[in-house]
Image (tube, rainbow, N blue to C red; front, side):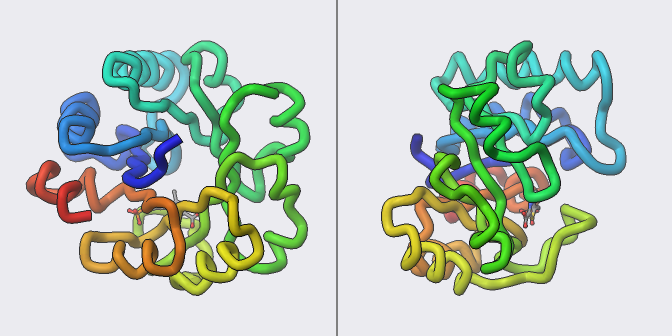
Length: 201
Ligand code: 3NM
């Protein structure tokens, strides 16, 4: 899976129609999408499922992998290609057992979490927050691209994306640390010109 430009989004991150934002982002060259309908203002129940279906369909039409954020119940109805799980979500071992063939992404924020995680069961790692972010209210302390560098040394062949506070002005430092890609929310959803923002990432 090409993780280079990884867009994460839910309707709560958008000031305009998420469908329009996703379409513009795909046109501009994102390589993977994660549906993360979570946090204050997020849709629930059928409204969430319906938006998920719509975004899933757009990704299918453009061959963009569709990942769901820790929402195990959405994986099957949305026929997701994968699931991204955090440290406080269901254990990686269980998710791997339930979905032997799906892509599994795992968030790690520090060495303690790295040491305690079954890294071999994850298809890729999300390392962060790289920088300060206002998008995730309970984000941990920013750790900087050094975490990517550390992970790259420890797991030379594991796909890694940096996440948290990444913008067009600091994405290069995350890539230089050895990341395979950058995962962003606001750098795209709040951009005045989505095409230009993604080109510059
Ligand atoms: N996870 P933005 S930071 C969803 O550190 C998420 O695991 C994080 O949003 C982590 O690109 C984050 O707007 C929010 O900073 C990323």
